[in-house]
Length: 144
Image (cartoon, rainbow, N blue to C red; front, side, top):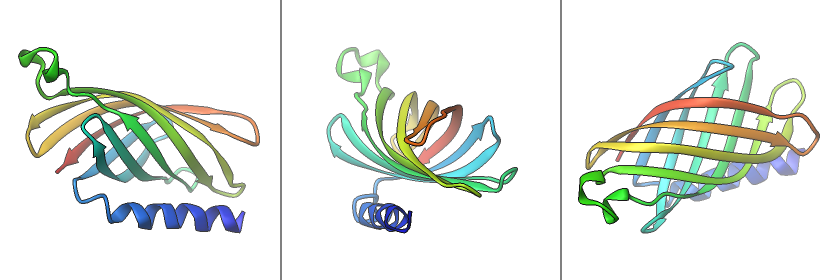
């Protein structure tokens, strides 16, 4: 478990070098949680996101990193510029009384209000390797 925690910390710190592009503020339901995320574009339609969410009812944390395919629909139709549907996945860890490591999947859409600000709605699914699963909806704002 300790090696897993160190791996996630190194993943988060390593991504800080890339994450000079977007910081996101996240609100998730259910369970109610608050979080922060860092996102870095890798290619034109590919991004890497690291996030950490706090769930005060537990208390517990969900920390993860994921690779997202995130095309801008403005490439297909000029009227849809700034609408960016996305999907992807990666690894995440839930830290509470009993900690779990597992697969994290995301499906959502981001709408850019201007070139530096966007809002997003995200459906997320966490499947721990130890069994069980959880899903939630995340609403947030991204600042570039």
